[in-house]
Image 1 (cartoon, rainbow, N blue to C red):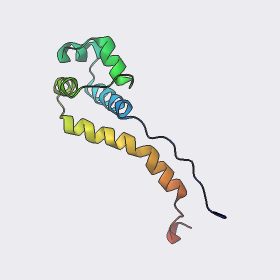
Image 2: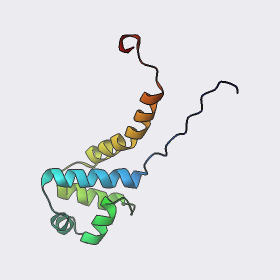
Image 3: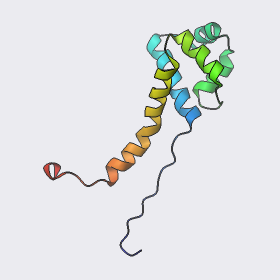
Image 4: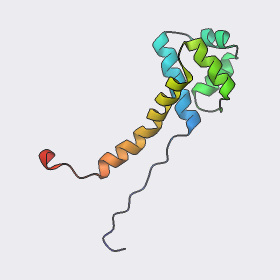
Length: 104
């Protein structure tokens, strides 16, 4: 179509990546080490590290255990992860949107 603007969409982050970023952020906010969290959640530090780096999928049971150990709800973690997933698409949408008249 002549004159049509084509934009290349950046791929959305995977859920496991967003969850990993979120779990790491919550852990950092609590000032808990990876080893401390792993011990309380009853998971190996290596596996928890893989989760935080977005390299492993987390089961609902393990997510609940880690959230419980962090004293945060699963819902709060999922909401925060959804926010991480929405950020790239928001940047893209803002870049392609014409400024409002008051911003021009």
